[in-house]
Length: 251
Ligand code: 6PG
Image (tube, rainbow, N blue to C red; front, side, top):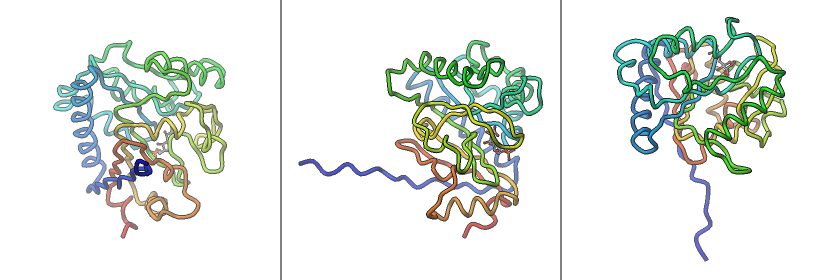
Protein backbone atom coordinates (compact mmCIF):
# COMPACT_ATOMS: atom_id res chain seq x y z
CA UNK A 1 0.00 0.00 0.00
CA UNK A 2 1.59 3.33 -1.00
CA UNK A 3 2.44 5.90 1.69
CA UNK A 4 -0.68 8.05 2.47
CA UNK A 5 -0.41 11.21 0.42
CA UNK A 6 -0.32 14.08 2.91
CA UNK A 7 -0.80 17.67 1.82
CA UNK A 8 2.61 19.25 1.36
CA UNK A 9 2.59 22.34 3.57
CA UNK A 10 5.23 24.69 2.27
CA UNK A 11 6.08 27.52 4.61
CA UNK A 12 5.48 30.94 3.05
CA UNK A 13 8.48 33.07 2.24
CA UNK A 14 8.28 36.35 4.20
CA UNK A 15 10.18 39.34 2.79
CA UNK A 16 10.22 42.43 4.99
CA UNK A 17 11.20 45.62 3.15
CA UNK A 18 11.97 49.11 4.37
CA UNK A 19 9.14 50.83 2.52
CA UNK A 20 6.61 50.65 -0.34
CA UNK A 21 9.25 51.40 -2.99
CA UNK A 22 11.41 48.49 -1.84
CA UNK A 23 8.31 46.26 -1.69
CA UNK A 24 7.32 47.23 -5.22
CA UNK A 25 10.84 46.63 -6.58
CA UNK A 26 10.93 43.19 -4.92
CA UNK A 27 7.53 42.31 -6.38
CA UNK A 28 8.56 43.57 -9.81
CA UNK A 29 11.72 41.46 -9.75
CA UNK A 30 9.70 38.41 -8.75
CA UNK A 31 7.23 39.13 -11.56
CA UNK A 32 9.98 39.34 -14.19
CA UNK A 33 11.52 36.04 -13.07
CA UNK A 34 8.10 34.33 -12.95
CA UNK A 35 7.16 35.68 -16.37
CA UNK A 36 10.31 34.36 -18.04
CA UNK A 37 9.97 30.97 -16.36
CA UNK A 38 6.34 30.73 -17.47
CA UNK A 39 7.04 31.78 -21.07
CA UNK A 40 9.92 29.30 -21.18
CA UNK A 41 7.65 26.47 -19.97
CA UNK A 42 4.22 27.37 -21.32
CA UNK A 43 4.90 30.01 -24.02
CA UNK A 44 2.75 32.44 -22.03
CA UNK A 45 2.58 34.15 -18.63
CA UNK A 46 -0.74 34.49 -16.83
CA UNK A 47 -1.14 36.91 -13.95
CA UNK A 48 -4.12 37.98 -11.82
CA UNK A 49 -4.07 41.45 -10.25
CA UNK A 50 -5.77 42.68 -7.11
CA UNK A 51 -7.08 46.17 -6.58
CA UNK A 52 -6.86 48.62 -3.73
CA UNK A 53 -4.09 51.17 -3.25
CA UNK A 54 -1.13 48.95 -2.33
CA UNK A 55 -0.39 47.62 -5.84
CA UNK A 56 -0.35 51.11 -7.44
CA UNK A 57 3.35 51.78 -6.96
CA UNK A 58 4.16 48.33 -8.35
CA UNK A 59 1.96 48.95 -11.40
CA UNK A 60 3.66 52.31 -12.05
CA UNK A 61 7.11 50.72 -11.61
CA UNK A 62 6.25 47.99 -14.15
CA UNK A 63 5.34 50.70 -16.67
CA UNK A 64 8.80 52.27 -16.44
CA UNK A 65 12.35 51.16 -17.27
CA UNK A 66 14.01 48.85 -16.39
CA UNK A 67 11.01 46.62 -15.65
CA UNK A 68 8.91 47.67 -18.65
CA UNK A 69 11.69 46.38 -20.90
CA UNK A 70 12.12 43.09 -19.03
CA UNK A 71 8.55 41.81 -19.23
CA UNK A 72 7.49 39.74 -22.28
CA UNK A 73 4.30 41.80 -22.80
CA UNK A 74 3.35 40.00 -26.01
CA UNK A 75 3.15 36.71 -24.06
CA UNK A 76 1.66 38.20 -20.89
CA UNK A 77 -2.06 37.78 -20.10
CA UNK A 78 -3.56 39.89 -17.34
CA UNK A 79 -6.69 38.90 -15.40
CA UNK A 80 -8.23 40.27 -12.22
CA UNK A 81 -8.57 38.64 -8.81
CA UNK A 82 -11.64 40.75 -8.19
CA UNK A 83 -13.46 43.82 -9.41
CA UNK A 84 -15.81 46.38 -7.99
CA UNK A 85 -18.95 46.65 -10.16
CA UNK A 86 -18.43 50.34 -10.96
CA UNK A 87 -17.66 52.09 -14.27
CA UNK A 88 -14.06 51.76 -15.49
CA UNK A 89 -13.67 55.55 -15.15
CA UNK A 90 -14.56 55.31 -11.44
CA UNK A 91 -11.43 55.76 -9.30
CA UNK A 92 -12.35 52.63 -7.35
CA UNK A 93 -12.29 50.42 -10.47
CA UNK A 94 -9.46 47.90 -10.20
CA UNK A 95 -9.24 47.59 -13.99
CA UNK A 96 -9.46 51.38 -14.38
CA UNK A 97 -6.62 51.83 -11.89
CA UNK A 98 -4.41 49.27 -13.68
CA UNK A 99 -5.21 50.87 -17.06
CA UNK A 100 -4.16 54.35 -15.87
CA UNK A 101 -1.06 53.24 -13.98
CA UNK A 102 0.19 50.43 -16.22
CA UNK A 103 -1.76 49.05 -19.17
CA UNK A 104 -2.03 52.30 -21.16
CA UNK A 105 1.74 52.70 -20.83
CA UNK A 106 3.15 49.34 -21.98
CA UNK A 107 3.01 47.43 -25.30
CA UNK A 108 0.69 44.66 -24.09
CA UNK A 109 -1.67 43.48 -26.84
CA UNK A 110 -5.26 44.54 -26.15
CA UNK A 111 -6.42 40.92 -26.50
CA UNK A 112 -4.09 39.93 -23.64
CA UNK A 113 -6.03 42.05 -21.15
CA UNK A 114 -9.01 40.25 -19.60
CA UNK A 115 -11.08 42.56 -17.37
CA UNK A 116 -14.28 41.54 -15.66
CA UNK A 117 -17.39 42.95 -17.36
CA UNK A 118 -18.90 45.47 -14.97
CA UNK A 119 -21.49 46.67 -17.47
CA UNK A 120 -23.49 43.48 -16.93
CA UNK A 121 -25.54 42.77 -13.80
CA UNK A 122 -23.00 41.27 -11.29
CA UNK A 123 -24.31 37.69 -11.45
CA UNK A 124 -24.08 37.79 -15.24
CA UNK A 125 -20.65 39.41 -15.04
CA UNK A 126 -19.45 36.56 -12.82
CA UNK A 127 -20.88 33.97 -15.22
CA UNK A 128 -19.26 35.72 -18.19
CA UNK A 129 -15.85 35.78 -16.46
CA UNK A 130 -16.20 32.09 -15.66
CA UNK A 131 -16.73 31.54 -19.40
CA UNK A 132 -13.68 33.67 -20.21
CA UNK A 133 -11.54 31.64 -17.78
CA UNK A 134 -12.98 28.34 -18.99
CA UNK A 135 -12.26 29.25 -22.59
CA UNK A 136 -8.79 30.68 -22.03
CA UNK A 137 -7.55 27.87 -19.77
CA UNK A 138 -9.51 25.24 -21.73
CA UNK A 139 -11.05 24.00 -18.50
CA UNK A 140 -12.94 20.73 -18.35
CA UNK A 141 -15.94 20.40 -16.00
CA UNK A 142 -14.87 20.80 -12.37
CA UNK A 143 -11.36 22.03 -13.21
CA UNK A 144 -9.79 25.32 -12.11
CA UNK A 145 -7.48 27.82 -13.83
CA UNK A 146 -3.82 27.82 -12.74
CA UNK A 147 -2.29 31.28 -12.85
CA UNK A 148 1.47 31.68 -12.96
CA UNK A 149 1.26 34.64 -10.60
CA UNK A 150 -1.48 36.01 -8.36
CA UNK A 151 -1.03 39.29 -6.48
CA UNK A 152 -3.16 39.68 -3.37
CA UNK A 153 -3.69 42.33 -0.72
CA UNK A 154 -5.43 42.16 2.63
CA UNK A 155 -7.88 44.46 4.37
CA UNK A 156 -7.73 45.27 8.09
CA UNK A 157 -10.58 42.78 8.54
CA UNK A 158 -8.45 40.03 7.01
CA UNK A 159 -10.27 39.90 3.68
CA UNK A 160 -8.39 39.16 0.52
CA UNK A 161 -9.64 39.49 -3.04
CA UNK A 162 -13.28 40.27 -2.30
CA UNK A 163 -13.62 37.35 0.08
CA UNK A 164 -14.85 38.93 3.28
CA UNK A 165 -15.08 37.43 6.77
CA UNK A 166 -18.32 35.57 7.44
CA UNK A 167 -19.49 35.64 3.83
CA UNK A 168 -20.55 32.56 1.86
CA UNK A 169 -17.80 33.23 -0.71
CA UNK A 170 -15.34 31.80 1.86
CA UNK A 171 -16.73 28.30 1.30
CA UNK A 172 -17.53 28.74 -2.39
CA UNK A 173 -16.45 25.84 -4.59
CA UNK A 174 -17.11 27.62 -7.91
CA UNK A 175 -14.37 29.61 -9.71
CA UNK A 176 -15.94 33.00 -9.24
CA UNK A 177 -18.80 34.63 -7.37
CA UNK A 178 -20.73 37.86 -6.99
CA UNK A 179 -20.53 39.37 -3.51
CA UNK A 180 -21.41 42.68 -1.89
CA UNK A 181 -19.08 44.22 0.64
CA UNK A 182 -15.84 46.00 1.38
CA UNK A 183 -14.94 49.66 1.19
CA UNK A 184 -16.42 50.92 -1.03
CA UNK A 185 -19.44 48.81 -0.08
CA UNK A 186 -20.43 47.78 -3.59
CA UNK A 187 -21.30 44.77 -5.69
CA UNK A 188 -18.13 42.87 -6.57
CA UNK A 189 -17.01 39.89 -8.55
CA UNK A 190 -14.23 37.78 -7.05
CA UNK A 191 -12.17 34.69 -7.73
CA UNK A 192 -12.60 32.12 -4.97
CA UNK A 193 -10.16 30.31 -2.69
CA UNK A 194 -10.07 27.16 -4.87
CA UNK A 195 -8.68 29.34 -7.68
CA UNK A 196 -6.33 31.41 -5.52
CA UNK A 197 -4.89 28.27 -3.90
CA UNK A 198 -3.99 26.84 -7.31
CA UNK A 199 -1.70 29.73 -8.19
CA UNK A 200 1.85 28.68 -9.03
CA UNK A 201 3.11 31.82 -7.30
CA UNK A 202 0.87 33.66 -4.85
CA UNK A 203 2.22 36.97 -3.57
CA UNK A 204 0.69 39.10 -0.82
CA UNK A 205 1.67 42.77 -0.84
CA UNK A 206 0.92 44.41 2.53
CA UNK A 207 1.98 47.85 3.66
CA UNK A 208 1.47 50.11 6.64
CA UNK A 209 1.22 49.80 10.41
CA UNK A 210 -2.55 49.80 10.07
CA UNK A 211 -2.24 46.22 8.79
CA UNK A 212 0.21 45.04 11.54
CA UNK A 213 -2.53 43.63 13.77
CA UNK A 214 -4.24 41.60 11.04
CA UNK A 215 -0.86 40.37 9.74
CA UNK A 216 -0.04 39.07 13.23
CA UNK A 217 -3.46 37.38 13.42
CA UNK A 218 -2.92 35.73 10.05
CA UNK A 219 0.51 34.41 11.03
CA UNK A 220 -0.73 33.17 14.41
CA UNK A 221 -2.49 30.15 12.89
CA UNK A 222 -5.49 30.79 15.15
CA UNK A 223 -8.73 28.79 15.41
CA UNK A 224 -10.77 31.22 13.34
CA UNK A 225 -8.47 32.24 10.49
CA UNK A 226 -9.47 35.32 8.48
CA UNK A 227 -9.97 34.82 4.72
CA UNK A 228 -6.38 35.82 3.89
CA UNK A 229 -5.13 33.03 6.17
CA UNK A 230 -7.12 30.54 4.08
CA UNK A 231 -4.82 31.20 1.13
CA UNK A 232 -2.72 28.02 1.29
CA UNK A 233 -1.24 27.01 -2.05
CA UNK A 234 -2.01 23.43 -3.07
CA UNK A 235 1.24 23.16 -5.03
CA UNK A 236 2.54 26.67 -5.59
CA UNK A 237 4.72 29.11 -3.70
CA UNK A 238 3.36 31.64 -1.23
CA UNK A 239 5.31 34.85 -0.65
CA UNK A 240 4.49 37.71 1.71
CA UNK A 241 6.09 41.04 0.85
CA UNK A 242 5.62 43.38 3.81
CA UNK A 243 7.00 46.75 4.79
CA UNK A 244 8.26 47.46 8.31
CA UNK A 245 4.91 48.91 9.35
CA UNK A 246 2.89 45.87 8.32
CA UNK A 247 5.47 43.51 9.88
CA UNK A 248 5.77 45.51 13.11
CA UNK A 249 3.98 42.90 15.30
CA UNK A 250 5.58 39.81 13.86
CA UNK A 251 7.88 38.10 16.34
C1 6PG B 1 -10.14 45.00 -3.69
C2 6PG B 1 -8.86 44.28 -3.45
C3 6PG B 1 -8.70 44.01 -1.97
C4 6PG B 1 -7.46 44.77 -1.56
C5 6PG B 1 -7.43 44.98 -0.07
C6 6PG B 1 -6.26 45.89 0.32
O1 6PG B 1 -10.58 45.02 -4.84
O2 6PG B 1 -10.66 45.61 -2.73
O3 6PG B 1 -8.63 43.23 -4.23
O4 6PG B 1 -8.59 42.66 -1.62
O5 6PG B 1 -6.31 44.02 -1.97
O6 6PG B 1 -8.65 45.60 0.30
O7 6PG B 1 -6.50 47.16 -0.22
P1 6PG B 1 -5.42 48.34 0.01
O8 6PG B 1 -4.23 47.96 -0.79
O9 6PG B 1 -6.10 49.58 -0.53
O10 6PG B 1 -5.15 48.40 1.50
